[in-house]
Image 1 (cartoon, helix red, strand yellow):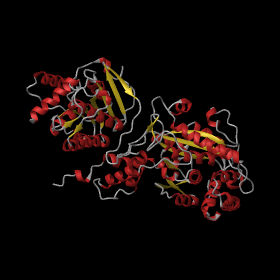
Image 2 (cartoon, one colour; image 1 turned 90 degrees about the horizontal axis):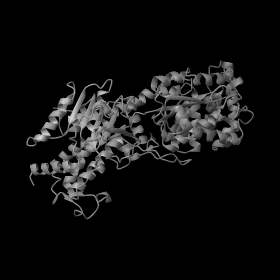
Image 3 (cartoon, one colour; image 1 turned 60 degrees about the horizontal axis):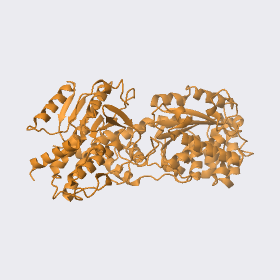
Image 4 (cartoon, one colour; image 1 turned 90 degrees about the vertical axis):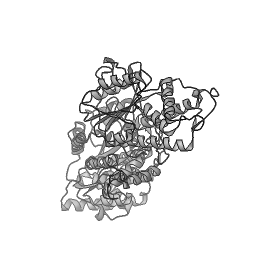
Length: 633
């Protein structure tokens, strides 16, 4: 069969099935975003990917065009028309002419089938119309319409098209088609442009009972699924109306054969699992990690020249289960408050400050509030053990409260064993709330449609908590009190001496239970430390990355590692505190801090200070050219 004959076969097949993307009919007002589009009023983020599906004459192309017209700052708009000219088809030529006329003069039109090259080079906004005709061209060029040779399958009528009888390609043709599809999907995933791609929803079409018909059905359906797995939004157009589709579904990574990021209840949870197993962290996708390392090493730079940025990008890809990694869409910060019985002897500030700071965080005026506002994070505060009644605040702030303060850890237990267990359980519940997509927690934390948190931060709030942190770190690591005790809120030399003596006595009391997380918390911990430990353990069990804060949170992380061994694989150390115990705790966990800004406030501020570096790590993975792509003359 000649190439022209093959092209005619493919085009005729597309027309007969109603799959052609040639239905560029102007629907008009119903698709103006300020009236009926499901994306109306939604903030468009950079590098957003939108997949628009629909049948013949559904209005999908017009929807895509009007969506781009609605963008406040689309940048340079490139319209990629994927169909090849058909000079002998007057009707088709007239459709193309009408379609060109309705595009704004400022848009650049590219009539090409090398869509991947356009996506890799683009920086503004791209419309790809459509994937259906692109796939037809790929099959034309590969000779896939040679039914006797290239396509094999059940005889016509032998199996219902919906029964899943897939046609098979000749091996050489299959390699060519797979390579083209993989290249396009990779370009879609890694492009730095905002892209809206149009395709036909093949599942609703009449499929001819031929090997070619089944082949096209299977390949286009698979292509749509792979695009949807990497899309931020997917829209279905039917009879001039549009519906935004919920959630993402995983798709196997082309290099590893493992699923890309798994979405649980609409929120990405990295390699993720629908149900966490207490005491067992979610698995890290090591195949994706290896693939990510190969990709990062192959970027246009000497290997390792971007230092920690490369390491963090690879780390995040392995936790999300996909390369390139995605910029976290929502950072959820939970600040946990609690007072401690040693505060009056070991701190420069009175315990009353803790309750006042709970109110300050709730009012959005604390240090963590300012950083969260700058970086687009959400913040909530919870009282687990504050030595004050906070009835004037919303009930959810105190709903998990375990106690008012603790015992003096140098001479008595901080909590009962039941209180320690309750605190851990509360922390697990708080982590689960950050991952929820329905119920009161979601209503409180998110505007409608906002995803669950895919990066978590837990912050501390409490006078005397660095004394407890030093004790926990000293007990677990076996270090002397003098090596783990710092000035905390700024005590003088006499105060440091008193604090060191308290820590030494508390470490001695804790040594016998240092391997038992519940008993350790009951002996020298506190409700806030128990909740932070439960929170961190649960995050790892659910497969959600965490940015750790300073010495107090890292002390709780040591306890979380006892609760869920291996949990540390899901944590990044945001910063290095000036407290001497912090380095010891980080060494124990095998973590290297991202930034060192001489911070010691707590609240989660050090973690958020590291967030721009995390985003920079994602940027190099998504925006840099590969070394092999350079034109070296």
